[in-house]
Length: 223
Image 1 (cartoon, rainbow, N blue to C red):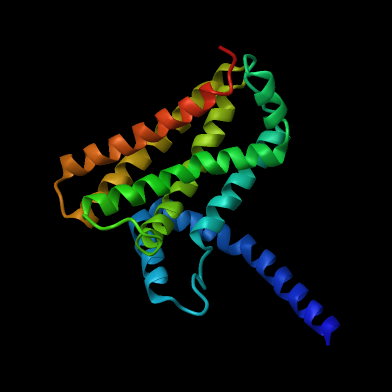
Image 2: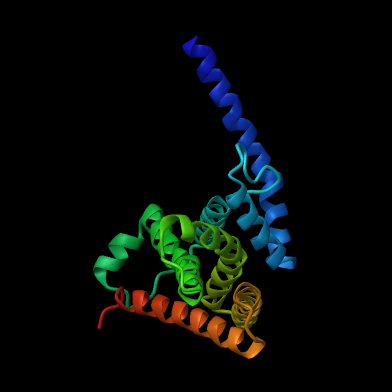
């Protein structure tokens, strides 16, 4: 009986792993080209509390984690160097692929968390785990393609050749512009406010996230 349970668990794991090969790019493309619909889908799935949520997609936190795993793998494959002035403690910490993945996960997870908290505060709702769940999951969807494009762009800027650097800067600019635009549309839809006000909130969110990333990186650099 135990052997049969083990085989069934293994069968389920293999199926889910293979299914990700189809559902991961499908979900990512859906978010990239129809971000608001994808975010609304995530909110509906969380509100419905189905037995099998996200049956035709990848769940938001898992999608973000897989995206960061991919960027981590690309960085390792391309042997992207650390900053030359990184502190010895930072070099020792980030030399580990697992630690680097944890660091990136922490940085990028701040975006959906901050956006969810900001939305609840604007709606004058108490910040509870239950209230945070829907906007956080929706924002995890939005953060996934942003993290992918921004990370790949930053890696390209570390290349010695001019063309990859220019391409990397363009990718970073495109990622930031897309993120600000979609965030503005999302806040406008959820709060029922004007375009300029929604754009201001989106800019503050993205700029604040960039400042947090720069501050975190500054802690890893020798003064």
